[in-house]
Structures are given as structure tokens and as C-alpha cells.
Length: 410
Image (cartoon, rainbow, N blue to C red; front, side):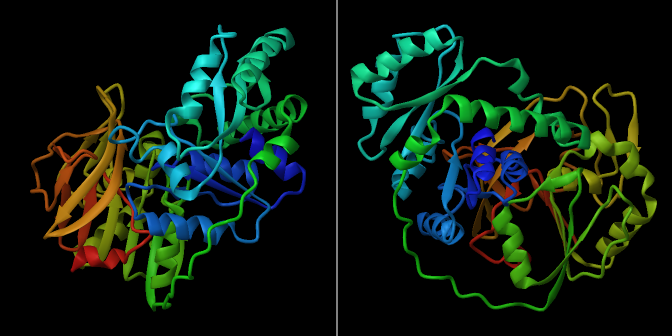
């Protein structure tokens, strides 16, 4: 975020990207850069689709910044699907961010290993994080010099730029606090990182890809989008726009459901706003009526929770009625993380997506699952995908940036 803001302050035309399936970091990128961030995921989509996205959104910009995910070589199977694999696919040079806390010359073998582990991945240089002092940085810089890897600078240890809990990072108050952190991080980067040299070492031409032909449809699409529902892959939204006219509505504000041929309730954090959502009876009634009349509706994770009978808070002491479209309740009590890539097989058709949630369904067998689901290594998982009439709902966030979502209802 600090690098994006520092480049924006210089007047650069930016395009942020996120490696992997995360839907929260792109929201942060957008705040820092003023430009919508795009996911590049080599497991949920084809290599050609990833190349096309990078070339298309990068065209006409000065700088593309791709934030990695996890460690450079951490993938769903060894290094497959990792940030390193993405860098190799697109020939993007890597700036290695190294945590230097409580370390000095020992970073030399660590960096040397990363720089030479995969010949297809080019480490252009290093930026150190959590550096205690200029003297500490001098030791780190000498280590880079001895192994022949460029060092572009460092970020000093600073409690003022530690990011708070992501779960609570989407409120207006949190965004305002994050704005201060972004500005501070940008200032630290300007003072301690040689941005000009970093950019020079990272320069390369964009890949050339043929434009994807599109046909504009005539459907009416309604998408929930507010602080409770905002986990949306950018390219999914682009595909919805290709189906026809997209209208956004806010369940938090109590907006009435727009006239629609397709309704999309994305994920988010409805549990944080459960009292308000439960009180917006007109919106709840509109969704229930739409579902009972056979309207096509896709609800993912938080969107599915919103369609359940109720959401119970983390203490287990209070339940908030929801739309009651689905015959089960959701709870945050005894929450534990469910996380990972998901491959779904629905009537012989394969879809891919990502599961990330803490909540649970209280009566998971209230409906049969219409899909078999498997993790990134092909091992079956118990996550269900439900269908009532034309309502399709589940915990998995599907990626359909390279296909027509209407195929789900075939």
C-alpha cells in the first residue's frame, strides 16, 4: 500500500494486481492507488486468461504492481499456484521483501537461496522490513553485496504502520485509520527506498495478447455491494457487465431489490452488521419474494448467510433473523477458519473458487449438496453447494472471470 501511494504521489499511472484468490487485499490496493485491483490466479483460471488480464489492464499504465501471496514459493502443491509461479508465467521480476527483525548477516544465505532456487524466477532485488536502525541496515546491505543481489532499501520498524485485524478493517473508521497508515508508509518508502532504481531494475515490456471478443447482453443484473457485501473479484464483475445492465444495491441501507433477471449476493462480513441487516425488512422480503418466484440468485459465503434463517453472534447469545430463503441457520459461535482452493463438479461441469470463512451452518444436511467439492490437491472436502428453485448458495467464492456464470443454471 505504501509503494502504491508513493508512486501515485509521483503522478504515475498505476495498475495494482493481487496474486492468488484474496478479495480483501485488492480493496486495500484500490484505496492506496485510486485504481481497481485485479486478481491474477494461476489455479482458478487458465494461464492464457492470466496473461490476457495482465496485458489488458497493464496497457497504458506507467507501473504495474503485483502483490504476492504467502511466501514466494508457497503454492497449493509445492510451488504450483504460488507467487513465484505467477512471476515465472508473466516474466515479472520479483522484489523480495525480507523480514530483518533480529537478523543481520544471516540474511545472506536466505536471500541467496530464494534468488537461485528457481531459474525461471528472477529476483531483481531486496527490500528489508522491520529494520531497527541505519547501522542494522548497513549489515543487511553488506550481506546483499556479498551475494551479488541488489538492495533497494528498507522500512524501519514502526508500530504506526502495523495493519490491524483484517476482520475489522472494512468499516469507515478502519478505512480512515488505514489512510493515515498508507500515507505514513508512503513517506517511509520515499525516505528509505530507492524507488527510481527499483523501477529501473523491474522494467520490462508487457506481454502482447489478442483482445477477447465480447457481446453485450440484455439481462438486468442486481449486485449487493456495501460494507457488509464486498468480496467481489473484479473480473467477475466485468463479466456481469457483459451480460447486460448491472445495478448495485445496499442491503445495509435497506435498498429495495432492483428489477433483475439475475441477483448476486457476494461474500463479506454480514455478521458484523447483523442487527442492521436484520432490521431492513423490506430488503429481506424482496429477496425472499424473488427467490420464491423462481428468480436466478447466486449467494456466496456472507451472501449465503444473509439468505439463511438467522445469524448467531460469536458469543452464541443472540440470533438475528435473516431472509429465510435457505432452511438452516448460521453461527459465529466456536468459529474456526475454513480456508483453501475449491474445485466443484456440478452435473459434470467443473468450476473453481476459494473458500474462506469462520462461520458454520448449524444444520448443514438440511439440503443435499448439488456439487462435489475438492481442495487444490484433489482431496474431497465437506463443503456443500445448495440449490432451492433457482437460488444457488454456498461458502465457496467462485471465479468466473473467463466464463459465463449463467452456465450454473444449465
